[in-house]
Length: 458
Image (tube, one colour):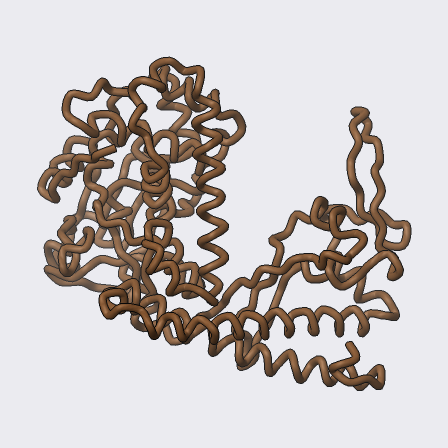
């Protein structure tokens, strides 16, 4: 669908019309006209009323799960689509994406029959910058830059997930007459577009949960001491942008928030399309794992696991830490005491259950803690660390092999922020994985000595 866009001046008029109160700030074009930003209009010492309160957005403008369903009470077509997709629309993400899609479709082309009741968001989506730099919109050449990084697997998984969501939406709405005519030009790119709006702008608003807050979502990211403001909910349920204590600003200064100081380089690039210039470490990364094909309990393990199939590496006081419940499923088997049984529930349904030495493992149980109580704990620990070491070694090999193809790319593909960000990600991830490999190697050798075996015997 072809979209229409409005100017910054129109945004200020929209804010006035919809009761968004600003205190010494306004929205302006970002540097190099890439998107928008919130900037100070006056020095903070001259702010009126509450000097810390910069923006107040009425609660009914906050795009949340609850408010989408409130909109649906007066919008029959929105309600019809929400109900058609089932449980997906009972999540914040599902409800908000469907709402955004209908708002974008409404008046996206002059003369189009509207597909949603007009709301403040019908106009607001036209202020969202047309520049889309998230990895889900990268070209094949740009995606190739990420080969060997944790972003490669994350992006592949995301595109598959988006495709499943879009396919489900199309199948669920096939019997809705108006949808098939007025949404005939809907494409997968349109679904990716509303996904990028949500992922790059949604915040975890206190008292509300995941939501999009108009006007405040124009604030860009800065971490640490560079963060100028924070978002919160006031006593009346309105969203508020507040100047941090001890911070001041003068006319023309950018008002920034943090998207998450603890987020790793991969997550920043994946969700927001950039890596901070000041970021000198990857902070954390996730590597996927699979259960070996020859594991006799492979299908049962994959079926019952509720954790992400992999593990996270992270910096920890000069060394590399890790976490991942899935790893322990790989490292134990039937001969160790692991078992799976199909039991009948009270409702008469059959359900797969996991047992450790005849004791059922509930969702609240920490499997690692159970293993620590075993006299063979050091054996299980050794298997886990060896598994991690092998997976990190494989990732480092993939990263190294991809360097040749990247160096041979056309010069045109080595320009711009995407290339610079991905190359930075590659360096930062390689540094963390090299340290992790050495740490795991030492741990493996140390544990192996306990059992009087070498690393090759594990």
